[in-house]
Amino acid sequence: METGEGRAAELEEGGEGDPRPGDGYVQSFARGLAVIRAFNADRPSMTLSEVADAAGLTRAGARRILLTLVQLGYVALDGRQFRLTARILDLGFAYLSSMPFWNLAEPIMEELVNEVHESCSASVLDNADIVYVLRIPTSKIMTISLGLGSRLPAFCTSMGRVLLAGLTDAEIDAVLRKSDLRPRTDRTVTDRAELKKLICEVREKGWAMVNQELEEGLVSISAPIRDRNGRIIAAMNISGQANRTPAAQMVKKFLPPLRAAADRISGLLQRR
Image 1 (cartoon, rainbow, N blue to C red):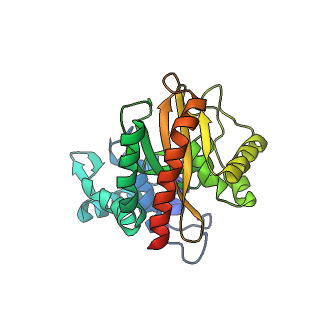
Image 2 (image 1 turned 90 degrees about the vertical axis):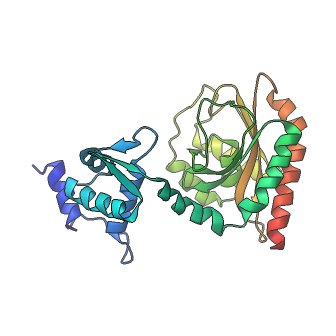
Image 3 (image 1 turned 180 degrees about the vertical axis):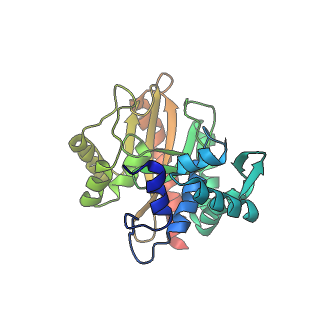
């Protein structure tokens, strides 16, 4: 019987089971990214064996990648423990600095937070997740710790539903099929047909609200940010506590300034 180590070795050497999505696929580069992604809040520092296990690689393959990253300055080695360095932020900053949206959006979002006294965030869609690219907090209202690069499931977040509404019906179906539709609270909608209906309603009305589907007590409303072609490229939200501002009141108080701010950002983008 083939062991996991033997199977990993076959993949390491490019065996016949090696996945080959296309001629342009560079597997060694993909493995390097897998090593970087293996580090997270739960695993900030790991031994070689732990990295290999987390990334699904042999020790030999993980070792070569880690030593390369050490030489490039993206990983530090302290005894037997490997950890990412601050230089890894260069990779994310390259994305942020290449997009004019962020510099335009931040002051407008700060004005919005000062007006409504609630937290405001912006995100983009990545497969079945939303990824936070800007966040202007007021006070901590979620047990989940959020910062730039944080991910949340798109299907049960207001920004996610806004972003999904910008896709075609076939693309929405594909995202929902690969989404982890586990309920986050007893209010979470997990039925694919019902979710598709809700997303299509968001497409029609131009905004979304999610009431305690991601986390108990958390209410969020979102509006789209569009490029010059009208394509939704990001979503912006206001989040609040249900016991302080119920869902209906949030829509009445915060939706008009939220949509106005999102439209201002869209207008600036469209003039660039």
